Image (cartoon, rainbow, N blue to C red; front, side):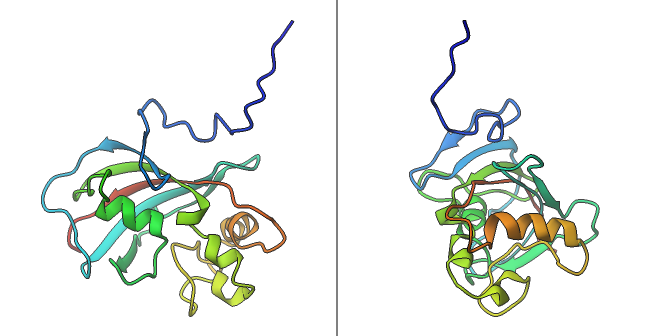
Length: 176
């Protein structure tokens, strides 16, 4: 007779592909696939990352990637234009070391460090990349509509009472 687990956590979606995930005091889970070298970025500097975005929910968890798009995601650290989970992953916290250029990190971002504020904004205009009040990264609606729709249905849909964790593989570039 099979024993069913009553644990509701989505075990397979949050696996780190063999990397042991560390849990920070903020709830962010992380693991370095490759530690970079050089100087860690700091507040008020620009950061450029390639990322692959997935969700811990849905039948098709992959949402979007900047890899092979020719344009990494770029923002000024500390300007509040990017979700807190990515800022913490790049800059580091008390219990997460900062990323170094060339480094690759898997992070699992809980909703309170992700897009939760967009879903609660009550304004769909903030759910478009570059719009006033939006935070990135948001898949580009005009370039990859299917990816944008997957992202929107999980992270900017006011009819869904919760948001699944966000899974990101981040590669930090040096000064660009």
